Length: 390
Image 1: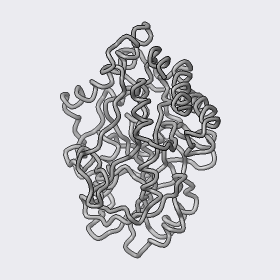
Image 2: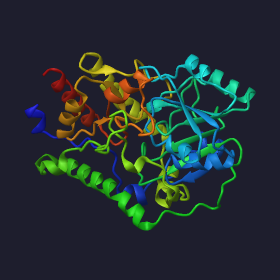
Image 3: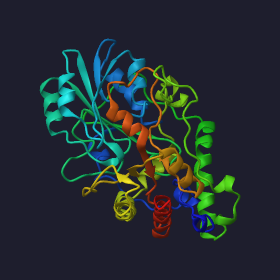
Image 4: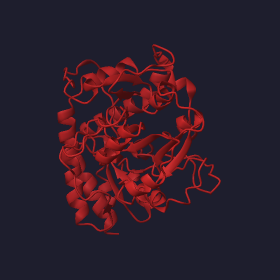
């Protein structure tokens, strides 16, 4: 551990550079899912959910079936518009329980919501057919699956709508996508651009990460003060839910002003000049390196036992004992590990879904994004091994 700390390597989240802004080569994504469907740019990925409530005329009393394993941000827009949230089971492998979902269907069910976790696809063959036959809207949450294009189970093309989040995959300050096979009717058109102060504030972390990556290339990163190099874990509210679970951050709850904004021009530019093929290739290579290391180290239990062809992994998700302690140690070594979705929405008690609680309380994510080199991944593997050997 001490040896690793003395040879720090920057392995934080993606940062933005002048090259990203001014010198990116055009790389068309026209063959991707976005250009095959109608697209609306939004300021946040979740912003599109409120727009769907307007377009589909969803009203108070209508029911929406949603996965019990969730972030919380995707729930609140539907609560705001009066829908009744009905959770269905997701097992400890992050797969939807189709039998449980079917048992919860009623005549009031208007929407079924499915999340593709970390870029891995859910099998929607039955659901998409069922929804079409019964006039139920199917929403695909592809926030974690921007460039995933699995061969067996397509992502983002089988539902009536799909949402995407750009910052989860790309070095951008904001941006989401709402896609649909038919044009969507917005309550107000066009959506307004986000204020400059908002974009500048969201750019600061990206610029800091780019600066740290530059110091790493120059060989001086390991000499920086720890307060600059240590990757900080995300913090939830100090408040708890009625069931005494840690609450999601306040910023995760619905904000009507955000819903009225589109994506910034800089985020659109970077998306349009990104090359999905190279991003997917690097992420898969980085994932494979950690996959081989973790299989030999029982301290890290894999969430997924294989990486299907075409999947673009968002992170390397694992189960660990003493997650908070392991996350802290990795953060101290500059590795942007996160206790994924550790917060709970305050409107629910979660008692009925132990599998979702297990995922929320035990999944740790380790970065494998496209800006990490083979040397970075070797460093992360060594850090994971050093923790496992203790």
